[in-house]
Image (tube, rainbow, N blue to C red; front, side, top):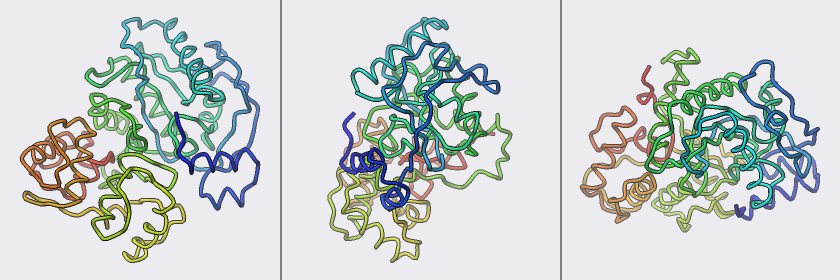
Length: 376
């Protein structure tokens, strides 16, 4: 995986050990080193720890973030959809993944925190991930999603889910794991996202992603959370260390308001003063990391209806295309194909399928969750 320039700069600061003050200036993790020994969990004995599956030692010290964990990011591994659902296969899967990440990607260890096999076995990925889950405090710094490696728990799911969906055993274990992560790190079911919400990738797959409302609903039910507690919308909180399609949508919307930028999905340094200016002009506290929080998104996303035109429509069409609606072209004109795709997206998330793009529809399109999507 190639890191964007600001990601490299940030990692260089940590490697140089420049301390909390500089880390705060760049707005991200304050890392510290610790032992790399894997330890079994008394609380989660169903998670196979690194020692039990025979993990290689990391090539360098595993680091713990100083940040607060604020989300779960789900992946598919883009591995074959095998029918060997055994424990032995799951262990070999973990070894193959670690070898790929260390020997090909050049990472210190497995990139993700946890892995779920198609047979439903849950394995520790990066060393110390199970230890920090037990503690429920600061997570291991991972390598599963640039810009989110110190904020998000990464879960890889065995298989490729562009056209197929995961087997029930995988989904059952994934829900169990998400519940454990949410409870220990004080997260909620609406804090579950997909890899492509924060990076340009086909992961976690179109078909799997369409199951996210169901996965979130199952997690919510298992946690016993009241429907009254669900927020109206949970937007993807992109910030200045995240690149990808959601950033491109934000750039289209900012450009529509007259800001001079190129919608390319790269959250470059030029975005920082633009976001600060937009937040200030809309009475939103200016975030030093240029984070698109709920207030920022909801001041930015315009209502769209049939016959709308312009950059916001292009942004909408661009993202619908990314979500698998291949017949939608980014023409900037709200046409019939766009209407049908919007209605389908609204049905998936429990919204009224009227084709009108309001805040909740925008939130669903860019990868967030909406209250209506929770079937409880």
